[in-house]
Image 1 (spheres, one colour):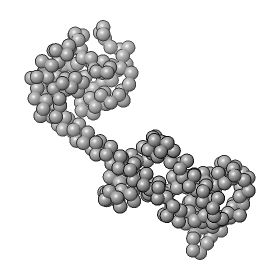
Image 2 (cartoon, helix red, strand yellow):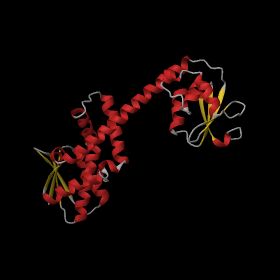
Image 3 (tube, helix red, strand yellow):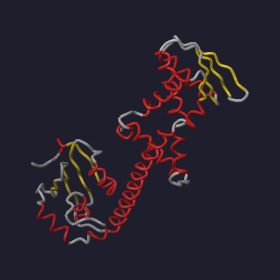
Image 4 (cartoon, one colour):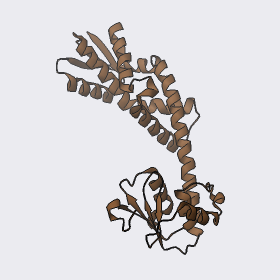
Length: 272
């Protein structure tokens, strides 16, 4: 007989839901406990049952404790206190954890947690869930601390990028243009066409860019995707391609906003 202690009813409900989704062979008896909140009696007979219980315990952690775990690291290790920053960096951290197993030594987080809980099931007849997550997750906490650090770096880069985009918007709002429109075709580098369908060569684009003090907005004079559009400053930009979420395209859309129209490549009106 295995005893499992949870502090809250929602943890118990989550645990039971996951267990019964995996197998209906496990019998669970639930009662309240004056010191530990909730006590479950589980009759464990096979290795498969133990695996199911370990998975359910891992799911309880993922559902109700991972975010708090990460936010505690942000507060205690990185000294973040702002609620919005805690929320955004926590979300980035969780996304990185779920998408990149390499960050956890080729294990997904759920597998790592299952291994920890499975080991405890083999060693003890009583599992105190809160005690395990407080005192038995040191290695995981160290790994998460590094991952949170990477998420902070991503967050700072995104903040810098958003500040850059905002500066470009302000610059373009003040800038007047004599150019009605420009046509852009997606690729490794954009291809630019004037309203008559004439392709703008790299030489022509460089000449246009030299007339604009791009250094004011932190753009390299050799950058050949965003910088030409900043220099030309058209009233309308038509982008043709297959993927409106492509990073260069998204940057142009974020800067020029309602001036940009994305169209399928099949609607490009000229010869490439």
